[in-house]
Length: 349
Ligand SMILES: [Zn+2]
Image 1: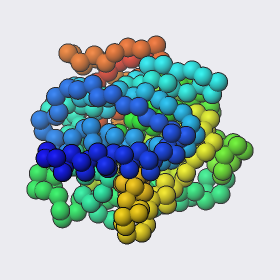
Image 2 (image 1 turned 90 degrees about the vertical axis):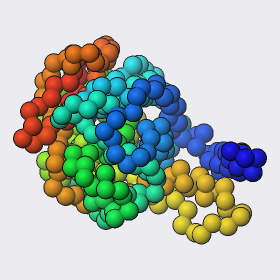
Image 3 (image 1 turned 30 degrees about the horizontal axis):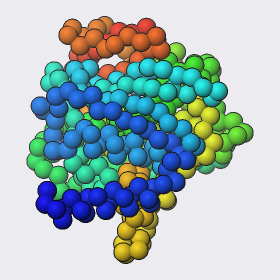
C-alpha cells in the first residue's frame, strides 16, 4: 500500500473510532481469530474474518447495554458450525467467553460455505422479506430474510446447490454465545417450559417464543412455524440469508438480561448521502450496515437437524463443562452426518 493509501486507512480508522465512540457503552464482541485453513470448496471469494466481524457488528448494533464478551473463532473440521461456552458468570449470568468454529472439511453432507466478499452490502442476495406476528405481546418482527442470489454473484455460487451463508451462520452462532445456549444457566432455567417468555422489563412483554420440541438438548427456536425466518431458528438454505429479527434480539435480551436494545438495528443506519462533515458517521454506519439484509425464503436444499451424535474421527470438539452448541447439517436424501457427541450439547434443529 502506498503512502496515500496508508494515510487514508489511518484517517478512516481515526474517524471510525471517533464516530463509533458510543459503542464503548454498548455491547462489545472482542474477537480472536484462531486460524485454520479456509474450506477448499467454499465459494464466493470472501474470507471468514471479514464475515465474522460483520456479523459481530450487527449484534453490537442490536444490544446497547455495556457488556464485553470474548469470542474466538476459526476454521475446523466440525461438519457444520459449533459454539462452545467457555465461561459464564456475573450478576446477570452471561457468557463471558466462547469459541465458535466453522467447518472446513469437504465431506459430503457437511456444510459448504458461501463466503460473501462484501457481507455488509448484502448485494449478493435478492429480495428482502420482513415478517411479523403477535406472539402474545403485540406484533413483532419475526423474520428478516433475503432470498435468492443476485445476478452479480459468480457462476460458482449459483452452481453451489448446498452452500450455506456463513454470514447467517455467524449471526446464529454468536446468538448462542450471547445467551441462547443449553450450557447457559439462565437459558436452562428460562427454557424449562419450552419457550422463552419476554417479561415486563422488555418491550413486547408477554411474547412467547417457541423453542424446538427437544428443547432439553437444543437452544433454537422452533423453525417449523412462525419463527421459521429467525436467525436462532437456524433453518438456513440455498440462496437464503437470515438477518436478525426482533424475535432473535428479544430472546437474547431476555436470557442475558440486556435492557437497552434496538429491535430494528437497520433504522440506525445513516440515510443521507455522504458529505465531508458526515464521513465519520458514514464509516460507522458501514459497520452497522450489516443489519440491512433480509429476504423471503425459497425451498431449502438443506436444513439443520437435531440429532444425537457421535464423535467425528480426527476432529473431536473440545469438551467443556458447559456443553457445546453444534449445528449439524442434514441434507435431504443424504445420510445424516454425525459430528459431535458432547454431554449437554445443542444441535441445530
Ligand atoms: Zn445453533
